[in-house]
Structure formats: structure tokens, C-alpha cells
Image (cartoon, rainbow, N blue to C red; front, side, top):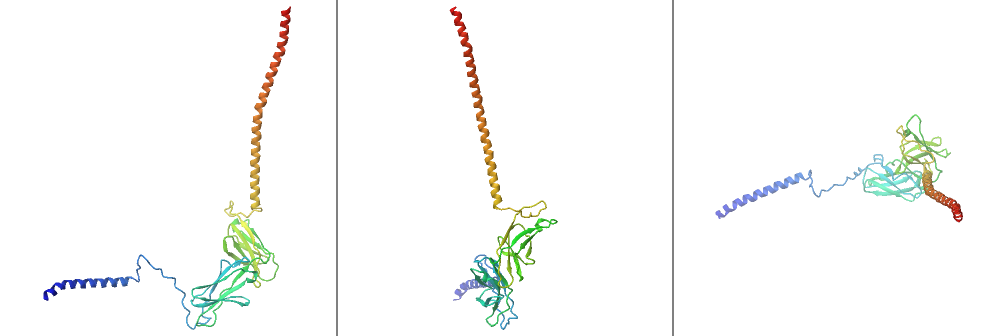
Length: 329
């Protein structure tokens, strides 16, 4: 029995050493896991959600939400737009309202950070100033309203005229776009400048003395629309203008020249074709004249040779007669 214990004692010490080594490695792995992540199969944690509102919060203490229009707050008739209301909390109810219309109300239950309100098939009566608010599950009152976003539906008023003007003392690139509004109303009217390829208007200005001025941002196709600031929020048709990307000697942009468009391109192409046809006609006439001159020379040579042969025959006939007469004698 003692000999058996003496034989098993080295094996027991080795097993204890291996056990201690395994425990140490496991502890080291556990302590390193929060700071280090495995190279393969790494999981990306999702973005943190907004915090829940504190219990017992009142509308005065709740932060205001923010409202935006995507892709633009200027929409053509029949177009679509999405109003997004962002709130600083989660698990809240969001409400969309329109200024001056207490019957208009849309409500959404929000689990994330933004509530979307899609509006489709817009008509002029859908234009107006929209805002949103939210309330928590612990509160029955709504928070303060967001800043108003005015939704403009075009096509109800005559189109404005858009022109560019530049100070001769400054480079042409520092010119201004003048939006002339054919509207004689006394209420508040504003104008917005749009650029082709950019859904959101570049800038909006109040109309004063039937015009609004915008700094020229560079070459491109621009449009101007004016609208009523208050109900019924009617919007006009678009007035467009193209600014070519040509440079003058001063390094600025030239003012658009009158008559630039498809008509000028057509006239230029037609003129080039006429010049080409005229050149071909001149070449054809020249080749024909060159071909006709050798024929005239050959005809002249043939007529001259026949005339010389006729003279030889005329002269030879009297000689033959004279010789014949002398022979008879």
C-alpha cells in the first residue's frame, strides 16, 4: 500500500500543477475580455438609445423636439415629403400638428429617436406650417412644440422672373440673383432660391418691393419660388435661369447671354452644314471644269488637223490637174 502511494504521489503533484495552470489562464482571460475583443467574429454594439425621461417630468422641463422635411419643404403638386420629428427620449408618443388647423393631428408611438410622418399626393391645401410635440408615459401633457417648418406646394401663383445682375466694379462671380415677384398683395411674401440637383432650397428671403435678392453661388441652373408666409400659404410656379460655367479675364463668371439655348445650337449646326455643302459644291464645279478643258483642247486639235488635211487636199487637186494637162500636151 505504501509503495502504491509513493508511485501515485508524482502523478498527483502533476495533476495539481496542471489544474492550477488552467485556473490561472482562465482568470487572465476573464480579466482581459472587457478591454480586448477577439480578432474574429467581433460584434459591434448598437448605438445607444436615447435615455428614458425622468419620472414626474413636466412639459416645462422636457426639451423641445426638432422637425425637418425630407427631401425638401418645397414640393410640386402631387409630390411626396416626409416630416421627421426627433426627440431626446425613447418610448414616447409623438404628435404632428398644423398651425391654424386644430382638426389636423397625427400621432405615433416612438421607440427610437425619430418619428416619421409621410405625406403623399400633396395639394395646395396641404401647405402650411407644421410642428411636432411629444409626451411621456408618466405625463399626460405634451411637451413644448418644435420650431415650425413651412411646407410650400407650388403652382398656385404666377411664376416670378429670375435675372442676374453684377456690379461692374466687382468680379462677375460676386453678382446677385434678382427674383422679381409679380404679386401686389399686402401680406407677408417670401421667396426661396433652388438649385437643380439640390433638393433643399439654398436660401429664403422676405420679398421687399416685389423683389428678393440672393448672392450668386456660382454656375448652374437656378429656380425661384415665392409663397405666402401665412394662410392659405399659396406658392407660385417656378421661375428658372441657367448660369453658364464660362470664365472671363478677371477670373469670375460671365453673366448669362441672351438667346443661349437649344435654338442657338440648332442655328450653329445648320450654318455648319450649309458651309459644308457650299464647299462640296465648289469642289464639284472645279472638278467638272478640269475635266471639260482637255476635251476642248482635243476637239480643237482634231478640228485643226482636219482643216490642214482639207487644205492639203485642196492644194493637191490643182497640182494633179496641172500635171495631167502637161501630160496630155
